[in-house]
Length: 296
Image (cartoon, rainbow, N blue to C red; front, side):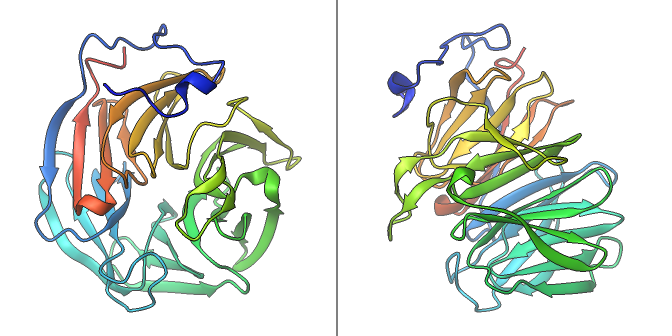
């Protein structure tokens, strides 16, 4: 396993921890590439047992070309519906509440009924630049990050408002709600035309009651994208630029789990199966890894 780019710079790095054993490398459970074009986000919908997979398509992350779509898979890699919902632009993060799947689509938040795959609502967000991930609070408020504007918006009572903005959000990419805490996978500060950053991002935590933000990782980590709970009190996080999958403990200790090509995007993790689903955006494939030999 190659040395992760920032591990030597992170003072809190632990190469082993009580949760991890690197004696066994993660095993590929399945891989899917047929009909896959720039997959960005995988979301496990527990009620249906399905995985919803957003695909940006040919036009890139900012292309308003209508060729983005969402596919439906089973956790074993079986394709249920390759074009469950089409006609989106560059769909990225996905999350559901109340039978509606919410999708971040560049500068709009699109609601799709899960049962019928019909459009329920489209919320155009004025000033949005690059909507990325979606999270849902216990009360059903839909949150969406804007990486290029370093902002977070909330959809509540059919109205969208900005709830946080500023450099302290580290250009928020991945979002994850657990209780009253919003976890933020920061892309980093001073984003360049190449999407590299002058300062790498951190894993952050926002108290949704006070809106106060604090770092989970004291030092910068990477250009972070997807974030999921590991089922053990820690997090699984991707670094899109490096392609790495990382484990971050509740105390901020960072461990490299997988070294993959550039483009590891918004992951899903099924803790009961210890199954990690990684959209490999630039490889035009989605790969599922069995972490049972890694995550104790």
